[in-house]
Length: 193
Image (cartoon, rainbow, N blue to C red; front, side, top):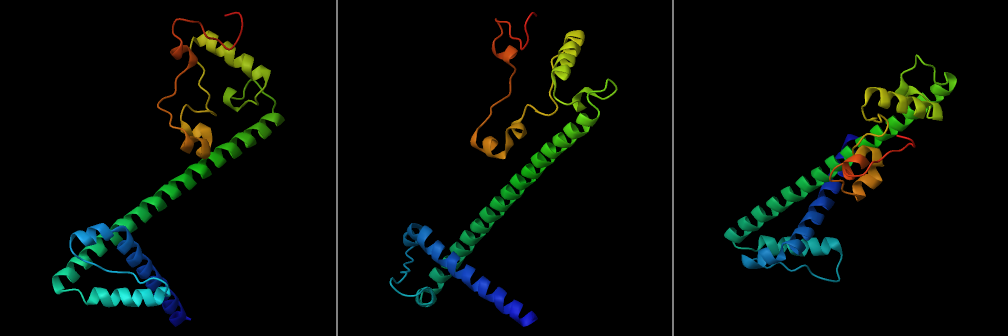
């Protein structure tokens, strides 16, 4: 069993090595030509034949060119691995954001279910009340009494409130309130004030 794993990993490594070599030869062709290293990838043959012929061309390079080729190839492979690592980190961060957002949604739904059982009791903190007109009126009353603006704990003023898909598609330079946007006009969400 252990030998089969080693063989499988060796085959994967061998395939990656071929992929990196061909990608390097294609993407860095101008750089290689600039330092007078010419490697041709034969057409119309299998990948294994192409790989063998490319390797024989590399081995036929003079010692200084061979060393330079290997240095350039190794630097390129390190670049690709660094890019792969950054992509993986970004994907992991996106996954974590998605999980957090899903957790927030599940928490909000749980609170709503619980709130439905304890329909907006005065002793329950306001941010745990079910969204109803009663809650809205209570928020307005508190804001008027304290003369402070309402801050929604379920809809934070950052891109996490938009969800990953929309947040990734849009760039938000900053969040502002309507009253901050239109300073010379009165803005309100309710009548009579």
